[in-house]
Image (tube, rainbow, N blue to C red; front, side, top):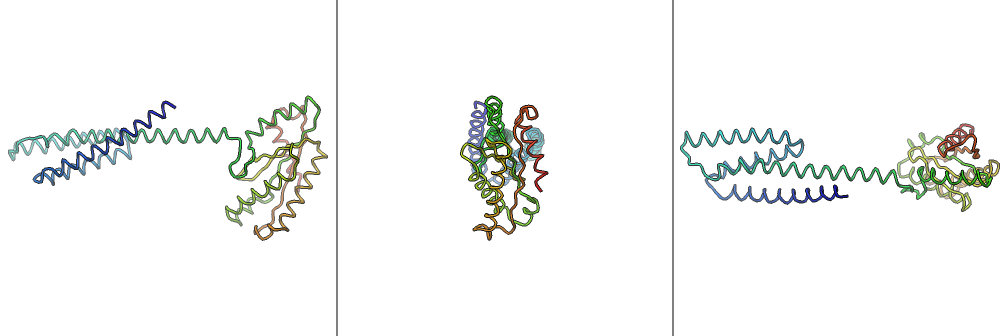
Length: 285
C-alpha cells in the first residue's frame, strides 16, 4: 500500500514539474525575439529527447543529452570565438533545462509504469481470490475446492452420500463457430439458470470453465438419486430448445453429464473428485 502511494505521489509531482518546465521553456523561447529561431530549435530538440526517453529508458535519454550538451556547447563556443557573441544566460539555459526535462519525464514514466504493474498485480490477485463468476453469479473452482472439503468431511463422518455432476455442452466448439459471442454468453447464462432451478436449495452449483463451459453440481444423494437430477436437466434442455428459446439460438443445445459418488478411498481430494466425474463424461454418448 505504501509503495503504491509513493508511486502515485511521484507521478503527480513529476507531472506538475513537467508542466512547470514546459511553461518556463515556452516563455524563455518567446521572451527574446532576436533569438527566437535559435531557442525554438533548442526547445524542439529538448522535447524530442524527452519523448524518446518516455518511450525508451533513462540511459538513452542521458546519451542523447550528452550529445545535445556537446553540440550546444560547441555551437556556443563557435559563436563566442568566431562571431564574437557575448555569452549570456541563454547560453546556459538549455544546457540545464534539457537534462532536467529528461529527468522529470523519466520519473513520470517510471512512476506510471509502476502504477500499471501494481494495478495488473492487484487484478491478478483479485481474480485468484474471487469465488464468484461475474457473468453467471455462480461459485467458481476455488469456491468448489473449499466447499467440497467440507462436504467430503461431512459425508465421511455422518455417512451422507455426496455425488458430483459434471455438465458440459456437447459440440461446444462447433456451436461457437456458428454463433456470436453474445449468444454464447446468453446460452451459458440460460444453462446455468436451468441447472440452478433443477436442484434443491441445499445442493450447490459451480462454474468450472467458461471457455469450454463446464459446470459442477454437488448433490446430497447417492449415484442412483443423481440420475433423477440428470434426467430432469436433460428434459429441461429439451424444453429450452423447443420452447421460447427455440428461435433464440441458431443451433440445438445438448448436454453431456458425468456423475460420480464420493468414495473416501478413491477420492482423497476435491480435485480428484472433479477428475473422476469428468471421466464419466466419456460414457454419456
